[in-house]
Amino acid sequence: MSRVKLRRKIRFLSLRARELRMIARGLLSTRHPIDVHLIPIRRCNLSCAYCNEYDNFSKPVPIEELRKRVDRLADLGASIITISGGEPLLHPELEELIRAIRSRGIIAGLITNGYLLTPDRIYRLNRAGLDHLQISIDNVMPDDVSKKSLKVLDKKLQILAEHAEFAVNINSVLGSPVRNPEDAITVARRAVALGFSTTVGVIHDHSGQLMPLSPRQQEIFDQVAAMDKRSYSRFYEIFQRNIARGRENRWRCRAGSRYLYVCEDGLVHYCSQQRGYPAIPLEDYTRAHLDHEYVTEKSCAPRCTVSCVQVIGMFDNWRDPQTRKAFDSSSAPLIVLASQPAGKNF
Ligand code: SF4
Ligand code: SF4
Image (cartoon, rainbow, N blue to C red):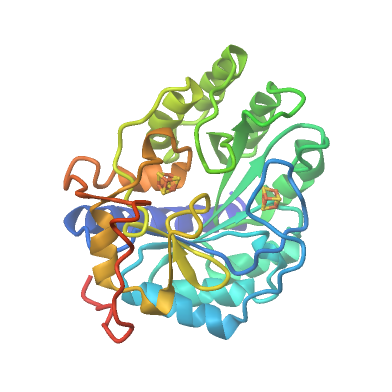
């Protein structure tokens, strides 16, 4: 076994142990965020036709500011911080951000389009302590909709297989108007051949809501979903399978509580598709906000396709019914004074 593979194995076992602790803690207490998506830069080097999460001009958030945000999230008890964008590899101090996350005992993840990966960058991500990385690949050949293509990214996947000591997941996306939906099978096969885990996601409309797949796309979904049973995709599939068939899911969205989306301006939103709610500065976000949003029902939940929030929802779907409604003018977001401490006893 090569030195990189041995290191990857050791780090994988250590990550699994930390994930088990994260799960136990998430089940024992409902009063901390389990996963936070943190945006260090909104700019992207691509412009996928279906995406509403990027621009082509934003500057990187200064690292001092990002460190403060990580500290605040750690004080709120966050278990995982997933760095997203835009394209986070465009941030010149991404590795410092990962170090800041790991130094607070938090699991560090990264979602990237992979274009900017080089052996040296992967080495720096290894050194910084990155725990897991995800790349979504939309098609085999680039087209007008998406350039996140296997043809372009295959070399990047090969250098990841050769150098990465962190876990890698390849997500295939179905439902975008790509030329050939069978591409998802080719992408997933390649990911499995290189030793990566795979998931399959279903594209959403511009507010994160369900867009049913065609019968052929549904068949492809089932094939890809059956390819890899090692990752968290087993849980993820329960929701995605319903979405693929145009069926609503019954679940309790705990966004704003167990899941947070912190944008480049440092505001807390429910998720990437509900930016603007509640849009409270992270520095003012307290345990009272977490408790408040925990019991707030989101009317977009039945047709939601935001899988990361659905997976986190599984910690609490079985308990604590939600008693107030979001997006309702008679129940405005909670205002809490900034001086209230976040607390560190999670
Ligand atoms: S690479 Fe990702 S962030 Fe960039 S435009 Fe495409 S989907 Fe959006
Ligand atoms: S249900 Fe939750 S995760 Fe889904 S779109 Fe609504 S707020 Fe976002």
